[in-house]
Image (cartoon, rainbow, N blue to C red; front, side, top):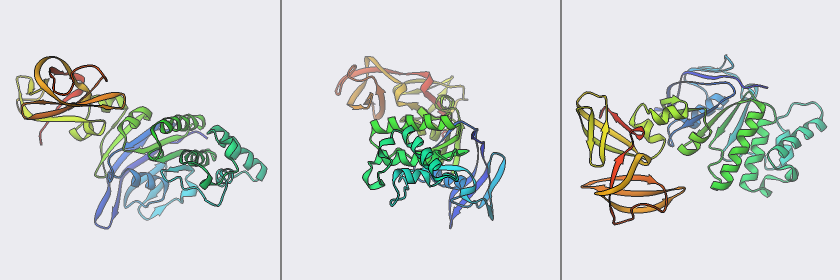
Length: 340
């Protein structure tokens, strides 16, 4: 079964007096990967549960393949929406084997056919040899693979994944992410991932939707939202940034770490600079406060006067803690906004 478009039109959800989702409109294109990115409490998981039919809507509509499946006071049951669900806590049936968990949602009338299809999907996710194991006998990564197989085996129109890899170690996380994307592509389903990890969002998404306080901050292809953030919040959602409140004058804002060009009119301005866009080099205008490894890069803290910024740079080379150096700002990672 091929994927379907998932559309939300001005969707709202309240929990008492608290607004969890505040007028969200978005389109997840059929057969593509859309990532909902935001901090805890931004409304990501609530949106996913509304699409699945696990939460009602207090306003607006949810449509799958052009069909309204949720509106105030009316909702198609979850089991009729033909969506697959993969959660962080796996949600496996503890009394069923891996094979039986995967077989549970299959509709083939013949038991042998259901078992064969379940086995095929367990093989697909690398767990053919563990078909007879119960969830408590499986590792976290193995349980998540069973959950993935169970979600995909019925050939859903859309697959909804709520931080499915967050409890796994980095190496296993990357491997399982690759398996997941390949399996979803195999059935052609529309995928909607929830994550708070910017690197993960940039890696897997065809479209990123940045959420904050229950509202959409920005949506678009990864390269577009990274290179052209619509606000300081959108810029910060995709990695560490430095901020400087300055003044635009003559087409630039001068910061203690270099000038940033702008087309804004002269006046107060907020500069936002990605940590990876600050380049260290020869000179003595800044001092290095600290340098520590951070994954494939080094995180360097630098100071100029009373101002401190963070820099992400190539590891093992360049100025060390206590050194003086120069720096400039790459234009592709610097943005100027209205301070208000």
